[in-house]
Length: 505
Image (cartoon, rainbow, N blue to C red; front, side, top):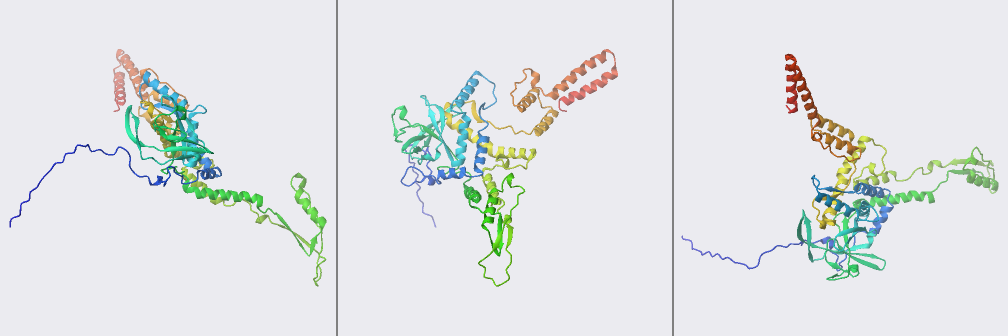
């Protein structure tokens, strides 16, 4: 049975419009859904976080350790690659150094970033107000102390084209921006997000085409932890422990005001204390402190109870002094609870006891290990993150090609390990005089210049071998002149061994 043939038709549709993809982000941010308002509210009361930090017995130490070890060693300028100095490179180096030095006039620039770190660890976010000159260049930064007074808007739908300098080339991208406003009392000031080139009125927050320079809004550069709109402190998971420790400390402190401190009870059986004895006892307890109370004694008198109706034989009054010291609170409450909470908070910062002043049981080896691990896992990544923001955001428009900003770090090199490494390198013939000089001066905290002669870059082991060979050649020549054939043969064998050794054989 034959199949019915079908006709196949192909048609090419030609379009006149070029197909383009979206050149700006279009994903949705559920966490920035603020209903009918353009302004976002923080997940937590920032003032509450500040109060918790202020009254905590461990958070201030952790924050201080972050501040001192991340930015406390200073800000430096260095070449991106190891290049030979030229006039152009030196001019670029000096220019960046001057810019960094002049970013803050009231204090060292590194102190501004110390404040940024402290605020970020307290509130989860921190702000810098960026000030530009008439050429639209970043020339000054101001830290905003009152972080809770700053409010931010959601990201607006409109995308703005921005220019980014990458390896000396200008790249254009689309970016969405937000607004900021600071309210103190009845006054409100508006700010732009850093990088927004549009003109904003600082009094109304509206974008305009033209405006006097004194009414234009400055920019805010934000430093936040996490992805929440206002950031999230790294110790948020330990908030209950921080609050519980504070209440435990308050309870211990309240003991001194309202606690019972009765050290002794006077028990009288079969009578009552006379008024005179009562006055003596009260005076004695008030005056017992100090040297005047040493070696003194107390005489108490009691009289029979006249109101007694007992038909039994009357007994003489019995006075008993009973110590209550055993039932007094001898030390603070919740010691284990407080210590465990402290360790949990430290773990949120990933800080060992050595950095917060809580340990006395350590030696050089354990301290060295703690510093090395904390430097590599905590402080170095934080320094690199801050340096990236400075180089690639704050100062990107300057277009520096060969130099960059970095945060200095401490020298935690173990001298014993360094000695072992240098010994191995030297024995292998790889240590040069210039490198040995550099390492020695660095250990002393000084800078050194290389030896200008060629021998400064020749390994020490090779130099010694060459020196021995030269001396041996002289001795061989003398032996040949004296016709000492046996000595010449031995010396030539030694020379062969030295030459083989110098070639790595």
